[in-house]
Image 1: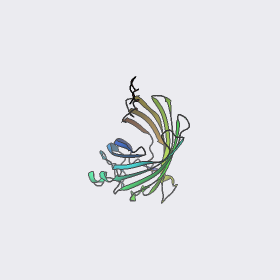
Image 2 (image 1 turned 90 degrees about the vertical axis):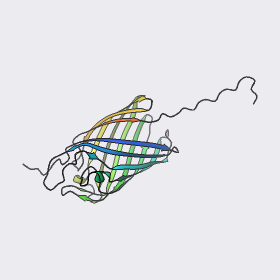
Image 3 (image 1 turned 180 degrees about the vertical axis):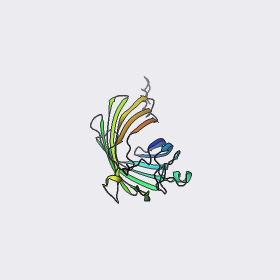
Image 4 (image 1 turned 180 degrees about the horizontal axis):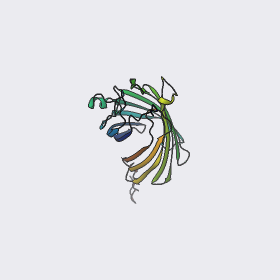
Length: 239
């Protein structure tokens, strides 16, 4: 019996290559490219099939800390991201690997840091060209997220997040308002290396909400250089 629900994109394996550079202590610029190593799904008459293996959309963004220092109880930041339609340029006619045009995403992020715990909340707006796949519509939408993280050991960090989006044109409609939760662990073995493992699932039936998701992360950040103490003056040095 046809229930009217289909997994147009059933399984997807994505590698994301990203780089970030911190400037003048309050500004971070970043860029990245997602690569779809695998994308499969059901064939549904009249609906584009999964895109298979192809690149995603190149993204470039910046994050500005508006208020607070790294060790303050409260901090506020603005983030803006622009994507280019590289998926469509590489695979004309693709439907799900990327957008058909440039997009913009603005976000405001607030963070509270009570002791070793960090509570983060963000809200934003994503602007993109509308698309209609008969059973799925996309367009400008509101994005949001709420996260919690904490160090349980100098090398071990636990984290969890709930996030989602909702189209402005059909705000709060279940079909266009995916919600997802994810939790995991992040290891800091030293020398600037970071290894993360997380898993989660969709909490709603909105388009794009997964039955299950797993994330494996490898990262490296240049360790902060400690200031060397000034040498003590030698005995008899009167300069």
